[in-house]
Length: 384
Image (cartoon, rainbow, N blue to C red; front, side, top):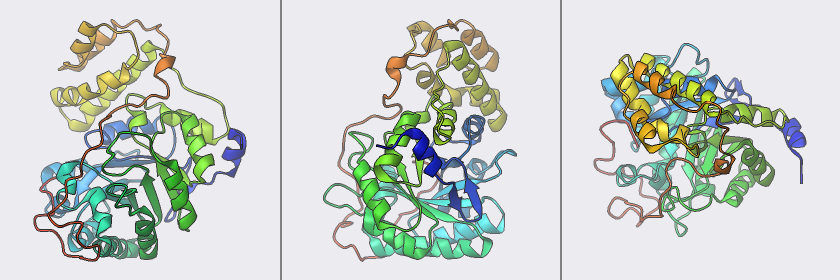
């Protein structure tokens, strides 16, 4: 077994076009979470690639105001990473050209991993690689549209629809042939959603099959998990999703781990409160409205306080704040000296649900080579 220092010394920066990201850590796009405020908060902790929320190609091309607001980047984001969701190759290519022509991003990731019904019922997200010809057209046209501008294109996907309809190796090879810069795999099927255990063996299989960099995603709750994944699979980098919810300092731990430093950030409750306040202030600044920013922050309260012995009344009050002054007043009531709850380490965070049947367009599984765009496939707005 390799030790962490040996793993760190063998690790290389993640190369995306002309950009080299160190450490090779990527913040996964999460709807309603990875906005400019959360990305800024995480970037303050450590290096890597910080991807915005998933953006619908149709909504972008049609310049829907909500979508245009979602793709705004902060002045400190020197490598702007944008994830697109689309089912129509021509619309996807048009969205990529729009991004390139208007210098809206430096990197484009294509979403083939989302398992939620409103996406898969249209043939999108984790359902799409099953239609390998349609998948190949989308990826190829996106890469070709981005190439003249030097914008690297990557993909993020799941193992497949379910265990009887696995697609990840074939899809990875198709994407590689189309010219993608890297492939990320969330090692669950769409049917699993966020349940069970991520199949790191599948990540290792994909790494063996491809020449382009492969990134692993799934069940990385601590920096030590990332190092175990690297050792087990040989991946070129890791993608962090739910593990950083309420714990943006995880990126500091990851940076230390990739430098071979045995360090783990365990802030006490007072230090967590300071980060909560910082997060809320960033949201207010980003959204331009105090009430809206505080409302958006509420969903994060339970994640930040996970495992801490905080009374129900105070928790409820924090989850209903309407102003920064009210938030800071409530945070001041927390027992700042309480140590971080070690029993919560290594535990799942965010969405935890049971496996469920994947909602697909009628006849979707009948043919792998039908490259017809499903009727009504493009979502009206961003999300998912």
